[in-house]
Image 1 (tube, rainbow, N blue to C red):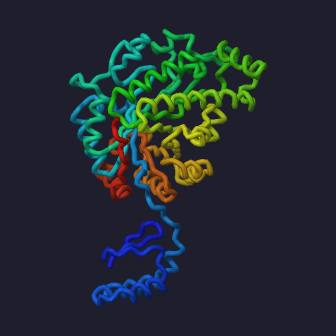
Image 2 (image 1 turned 180 degrees about the vertical axis):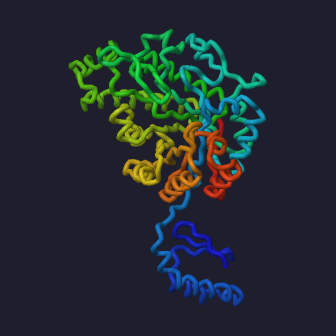
Length: 423
């Protein structure tokens, strides 16, 4: 008779559930069951368990997966060809459903532009063109409708946060919204190339970001909003005129010359935290059931170098869901990061996952490494979100069918996430 292991529980196909079974307990249960047919079925199982009990006890326990387990994928600008084509979106969503994914994070804010028709952007003079589908459809509305039809959540991804290209309309039309380094420099080098940073302490910047976010969560049938590691500020910045005056007003001191000064770091980080709390309240006021999701870098990097105190955000109940980006080329460094105490703390409060890199066009990732990392996360009770959709099985060293079979093996059963009821 087959036995399914689910954490410390064993389920027999007779329909009877035994929790934390010991040999003596099983013998008592057998005496209690009077039906001879069931007794004949249980006796062989008792014998097998008595032989294997010691071996099973030495296995590393696999934590049972929560019904709110995150199984997500980011849809990025690299996936624009798919997003703009209705049939491709339909096929993609159906395939994700078949493979037991449950959440899609589509990009809606990148490089100073929105990926939906935005009245807020147009009023700010930064929307010279509108991203639409091949049939003129609203990409975000179409994706949300198709994903919800398949039972998947849609949480739009506010990817660039406070970051923008220096040549974007946003940067050129609102230079007073930008912050600077101590030497007056305005740019830094990121994974997206050379960028400028909106001043997260400036009230007009805060209002603009808030208006964009509220536009998304109120005008679209989406399940929340996600911010990543760019909802932050590199610690070298914050030496613009507005921020220095605000710091002096509140502390009676001038900003330290050292951008890594602990008090200066904490003051700026607290300001970003206060804005995120304010933004959370605004979102919840419009859509109480919206998931306020954050996908940052690992904590030491996020706080010390980018003033992003996401652990403080969780402790202050600002965040509903956390996915930490852990893009590592080997299993050992991946496990080291996902075993950090701050992740263990957060997963006691909210659904928690890790971001897993499935490949880039010039840097494919093997299915073996992906599976090893996902299983390491699952054994620690963590969900996963993959970066990014097209690299799941297109930019890959294995054929698409083999990759899809690999994901099916990881997610062999559905993990439902429930949508909040609409008001």
